[in-house]
Length: 54
Image 1 (cartoon, helix red, strand yellow):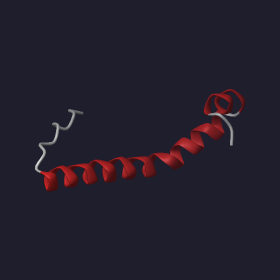
Image 2: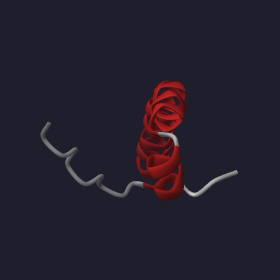
Image 3: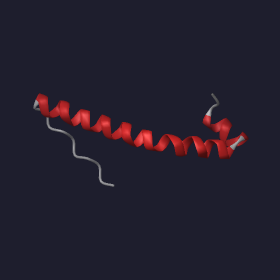
Image 4: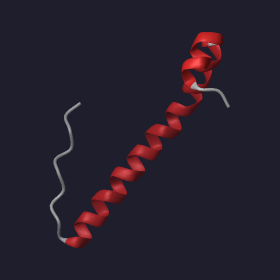
């Protein structure tokens, strides 16, 4: 496994490809974490922080 900065210098196309493959997973993981956090807060009675504007 290479450091992303090293890969960007030595093989930018490989870095682009790796990021393209990872983005859908990262989006799913961030949504899943946000949903889990909201669920835990609702169960505990804590108020959730407002979701940041896009």
